[in-house]
Image (tube, rainbow, N blue to C red; front, side, top):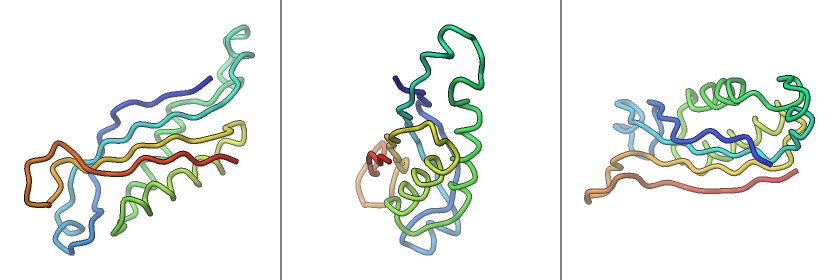
Length: 117
C-alpha cells in the first residue's frame, strides 16, 4: 500500500553553479510512502492514513532550503518524511530538475531513491 504524490512542480534554488542557486529553476517530484492504510479503507478516517497534504507541506519546506546537490535535497526530504510520518515504512522519491544547464536539450535530470526504516 502506498500514498502517492505525482508530478509535484516546485520552484527552488538548487544547483552546483552559483547562478543556478541565484536564479532558481523548476523541479518535479514523485513520492510514494509505503504505509498500511487498511483501517482507513473501512473507517473513512484521515487519522488512519497519511495525509498527502501534510506530505506536501514537508516536501515544500525542504525544497525551500537551497542545496548544491539534488542527492542532498532528496535525502533530506526522505529523512524529514520518515520523522514526520512514523507509520511510513519506506519513502520512494524521484527528484528531477527541469531543463538542467548541461549543454543539451533535456526535459529533466535528477535522482531516484528509496529509504526504509
